[in-house]
Image (tube, rainbow, N blue to C red; front, side, top):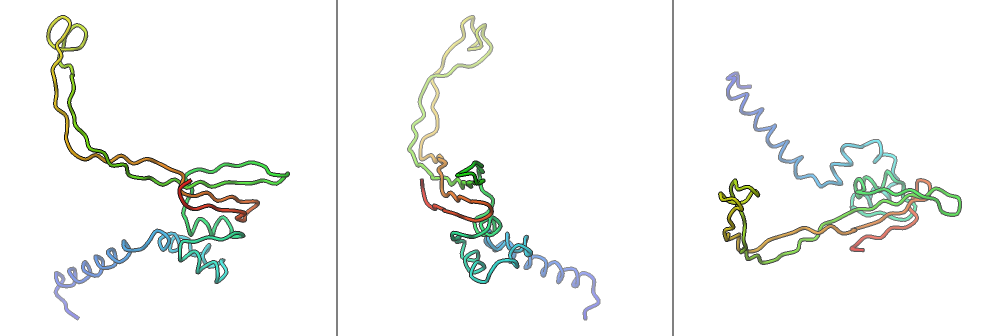
Length: 159
């Protein structure tokens, strides 16, 4: 063992950096499983396989769906034929690409009406940005319905 504290510190720092790098490569499913081992250990072997693949099935519990798909973006509760039902909704985003051409008229300054330097203010042309622009549009990506604590139906994909 090396007794030089500087070398020992650099070795520890290297090991920590590698550990942090490896844990940051974990998928969201792997992180949820690592954070909730007691939930994962309660699953059947077949449900563990599905959760590891990010899939669900009818009959799965809410905890299993959480491990597989994560927290829902919306939760709605209701009743169906006298039984409590719950619906989880997951929201995704879709990029929409556009080309922009910024040209217009705008005001400035300290005029009486807040525009320009004169009594009524002044309006000047401006040139905006040119080029591609991206806007992200939300959409319903998946829904899961529960009766009691078990999945009764699910739909995954744009709705």
